[in-house]
Length: 328
Image (cartoon, rainbow, N blue to C red; front, side, top):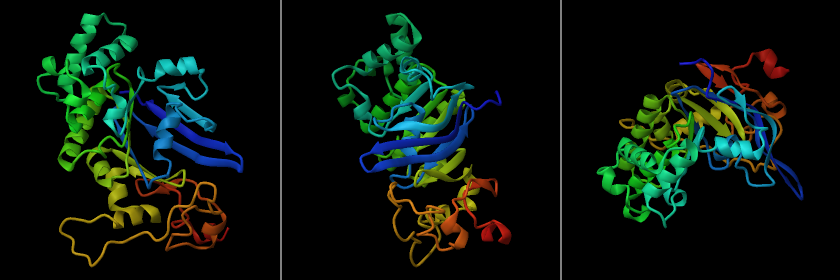
């Protein structure tokens, strides 16, 4: 296994120009994912999770655009490639799994036809070889009787089975990176567990790097190796899952952990994070979390912290800084 990360995002900035000024949707986002690793990206709605995945794939809705930073895939910078080159990378080197499998599958064609077309587009196989590969993929993602099911249409599959088909499509060209955006949200809990177990197995078997975007810390705990916590367009904490869950460093992460019920623990009420995440066009000076933070001090109101070592990972917080740093 190479030491080179499959995905390396460096200080990524995404902007949306508008009539009343420019809105910064992502600000200095940095993260990396190694081969065979699952990075969970978690946060409230609007924190920038899905935006990060779209920016990596260059699928931002105009006038949104990458205004700064770099995106590297297997040692090759891709954020400045011409669109024609980027089209070759999508599907072939970057697979995508979306929240609602019905939006990813064409209801007019059998799943076999859709798999065959994807395999032939990116792999250059003959039609018969591509069909054989399609059946193998369906079997690999746990579709029973794949020889028969390959002929069926999306409406003939349950929600969990449709999501397995979408995973098969994402893996059709054997990409090095898969971006999974809320892949279990529309599924019931038992099916969620099956899909997360499948993602882990496929990741380890193929050495695929996975960016798992979700708001569900339970899914992160069960599936991911590391987790990046996002707030108001920035990564506020990143580190190994077990460490971040057991010993969160950022007050926002502590609030997230405190709001999750724990089996066997008797508490009068769950903790809550007061207030709401600021609009992207009204982020306060200093730390964006300062209006909601119970541990805020003077420097939090003035200076925005960068990621700094904290526990086994990094956190963007002045809480553990020295008295001299807090007063700076």
